[in-house]
Image 1 (cartoon, rainbow, N blue to C red):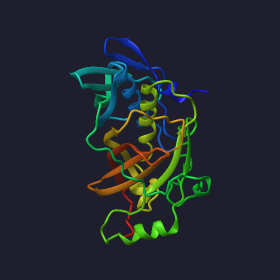
Image 2: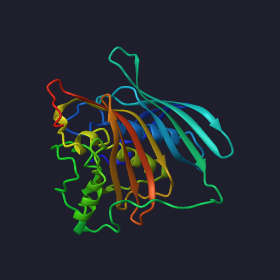
Image 3: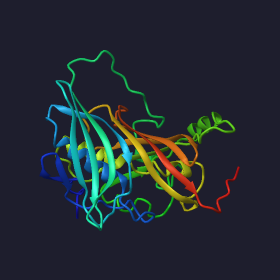
Image 4: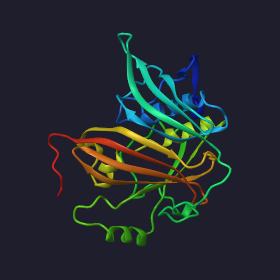
Amino acid sequence: MIALNQQIAVEALGPNLYRSVMPPISMGVLASYAYGGNTLAVAVNSAYQTVQCSFHLYSICGHFVRAAKTDRRLICQLETARDTRTFQTRIIRVSQEADDGSDQLCLVASADFHIEEPRSMVTYSTLPQTKLPLSNAGISPTAAQTTTEHGLYQNIERFLDMHPVTLAASTREEVEERKGPSSAPSKFSAEEFRVQMPLRSEAEQMSALAFYMDKGLAYIPANHSGYPLTQASACATLDFSLRLFTHEIDLRRWHLTEVTTSVAGNARAFSEGRVWDGNGRLLASMTQQTLLRPKADFHPRI
């Protein structure tokens, strides 16, 4: 069985040129193209190969140009944009070889690395809406907050343990009270997750986190509005911003993620996922603007 660190591994082809060891996988039965999180994880891993070990990824932002295919490997071309005493920045272009032999660009991103600073002026972290610590009593595979499309994540479930978290009734009522007539869905999804196999380095930890955090953000706007994904003619991530607030992460331990959507229009939507450790420390945030087009026969309920 292929482990996650193998699925997101890269090998050097030359100076600032890397190739994924494995072709990317699709997320599940609703998409034949490659899972975007796999492409992003390979980009993160390749960037780590070009920086000194005293620098740690804190931000990677960019655009998905086109969906990658699952029958060929990814090529990562890197460019050094900045090397200073405290920061290193890499521009990453991820592509695949087309059937005619040309390069097809799949993703372009900028990754920033920062040293461990000796002191901080302020230190704090916002808490999740989900009550901590988590317990098995708060976990339900049929929680109303979860996406219900069968097989949606079946290809990435072999790498991750993921359990939806059921919210207390009072919490759901408090959230609904804040909802206005034209406001965004007040619902949020919460789940507990961890990586099943060992991750041997910071590069693997951060790449694995990027792999996970792309999961479902494109689908959340439809799901939280009560529409099945079968009513969409197109659903894909356009741009993303993954921000990491610490490099001290161990994804073998249980973590909590909460996902919300805040605005939608012109067939686009904006959503955010946040990840906390078991102590309630915010570790990372992923924001995405996504394309969400309805089918021609779609009729909204309102």
